[in-house]
Image (cartoon, rainbow, N blue to C red):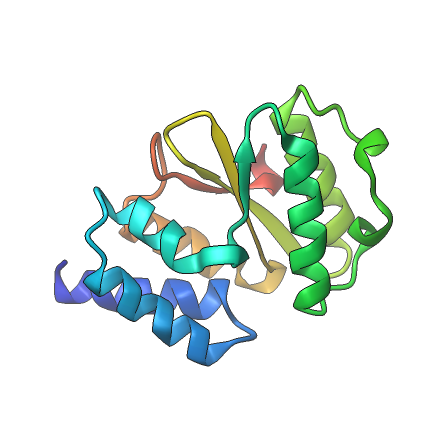
Length: 155
């Protein structure tokens, strides 16, 4: 990994794991030492439970993971009261758009991370960090296809 990419990875984790600086630093170290097939996979693995994922046909499980993660990080939102009946679990874009609507008024976004297989991965971020995250995803090549990290505000 090039030195400038290392700095971008550090900045990315500072924004994705804003509430746990020590964990953000550990994630950077994980990316630098993990033998992953590519950078997007290494980044997702380093996020651990802060980037939950589920098979395409198990979005209900992803909803539960997101609710648990949000509660554990003290993220208040309408997501707390959501259940599977609020979503069309056969339409991933609709699923992520509805979660975005439940978070954005509280200052958070949901980002969908393209895994390259039949799973969906998601990350909750602060809305105020959206523009900086967009710049970093471009610099790290996380904008299209496998590895793309996209804010659900744009779905």
